[in-house]
Image 1: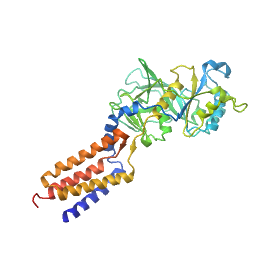
Image 2: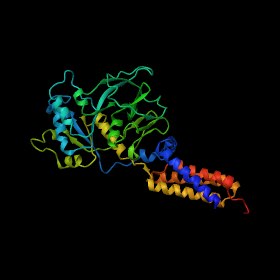
Image 3: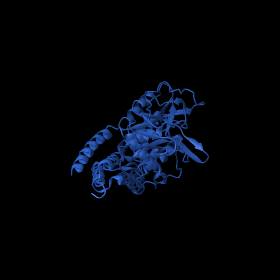
Image 4: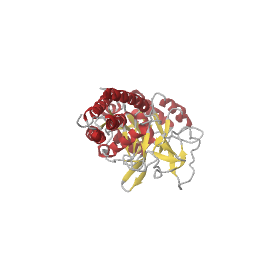
Length: 403
């Protein structure tokens, strides 16, 4: 009984301290490495995810074939104002415009009205045209947008392969930038694949592209917790279990066959005069949590708006990682403590360390299998520490064989 009481005091004190340290984030790196290992072994679950039935992403296209119907081409501020006003009643969660909305300086007519049309939308992401650096050590030109362009706070050190930003060429009109967030617009072709960088490196920092900005807004992930893993097993970890698989260079590989709902922007421009939207258009636009991607489109693959809409639809169709609830984690901790009591009271001293290691290994295997089957995981730090402490105590003060 004395051994049991001492072990109870040890495990209670250790559990309280570890829980406090865990909440303070001091064991976060250990848990992140374990999660990276689990995700790396279940990567196919994300890369081969089936298309989403809910269709949360809608492409609102300004067709090249209809350019005579617009005030100018590329579409002028008046055209954008009318399209945005037509979208307001559908209340999307995020509005994404990958193209750079700039018409020269001074700003032409209706830019202010277009900016005011953005105000009702809760979250808007605008694209900034960029080019890559010509050399590895070339300084990037940000054109005064250093503070306006976010940066990743948490990323791995293997970012040498990430494309380097050379310069921001064109930014959206300043009036529009006041109502939105900005991300870098950049895509590239690799043989028959379309790649969308998730970030570009700049002076030892990583700057988000439109895809990263849109995912941060959709998942409500602040950049303080938006973790970017590069190199082998690369991917972006988002809030609520979101994960975006990436190439070692931090690029998203687009599935060009991804189908998305499409709405002709011309039908939105006449809503105030006559409702030209079809029943299918309204079905596509209505619904909670929708993401609208707007831009010019020639009805073929490769357009900025189309590839970003396809990429967002592809990512949002991927399964989510499920962290065990706090209550279930407590249950696991209690089970680990009970296993520790068994080690002290029933296992001979000379076998305690081996049995303790076997328990820890078995727990990790169970967690691995649970993640493989249902993407469920539990941080291993605290239960493993409880078992290790119990095994050490059992080795010193455990049961002596024959007694």
